[in-house]
Image 1 (tube, one colour):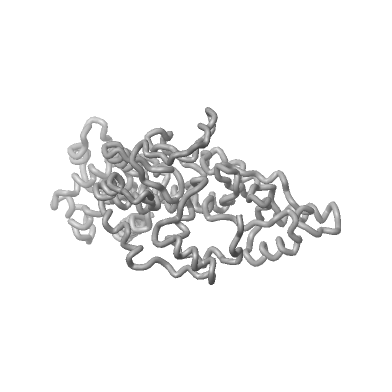
Image 2 (image 1 turned 30 degrees about the vertical axis):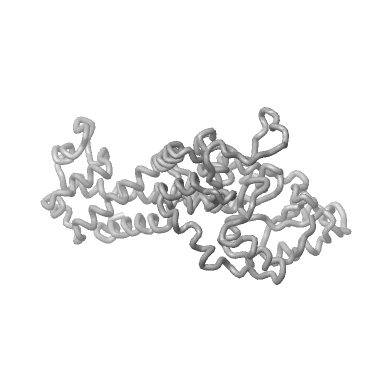
Length: 400
């Protein structure tokens, strides 16, 4: 391999091209949005000119699932259709991989005889997947992998159920600042100080992890010897690493105890890092919607118990005998209860009746998705609507 240049920063590459570079396949072609032309420009002058208007319209004919899957079947270009998981989900009008949306998409794929490689159910939103007719695998003269080894491509129906995997975190896919063992210690100092990093990955010429250098490892090394010349003098070879397919929850203790773990792909190359701060942020994103929905239910229950009799509450439930208070009602039951203008007037909230019912339906949908424990966080627009609903309830009923 000959490197044409190694001084092009990641920030010089437009986001759509960086998305294509995020493929988990060992070998993949970059063909979307004029990738070959643009990489040529990067090699020449370090500038990504971006896609042309013709290149940008490549996927515009695939606005619906039907059009996309038909396009896969009729594709004769010799190159598979590639798009990010985020773009793929948009064709079905969804933003999260809930149990219901995954089941619907997999059913549509099976009906058309199409598969995704790697599976759309795993990995970060901006990973690139390929769409191919089932059974149309690239020809290879390589021997069949030994039993028990993971191949680079898998059909979606053969994958295990969705779980919260390491590769679902953005930080696990964004790359990591690295140094070589033979680099001078001043290089590590400069990268850590300028980037405000607490640790760097130490890798060999193939980007295989050798260990880590951190302020802690530098301090410990200084206690042992005074002449610290290269990174090899301060390396912590016990630095932990995990595969991006591993279950995230099983790594929580390790991340909190060590402060970080490096993430590696199937070829053992470092592709990201997860710190305790990343873990806190991720679980905060997942937990916040649960807390907001619980507050909405609590505020609705309190007011409903004050306004309506037990018989009126039971009249809205599918199983009236099991309703002993408003605590036993669902969002659907509240919508049925407040659909009556007379009931709504008794709430004495100065809000538009029809718009409130629409927002209540949004909250019902969000709660149902959360109860399926989808691994993807709520999109920003939906989270804004949930927070807006809570703020509205706090204003009309300011009690804590």
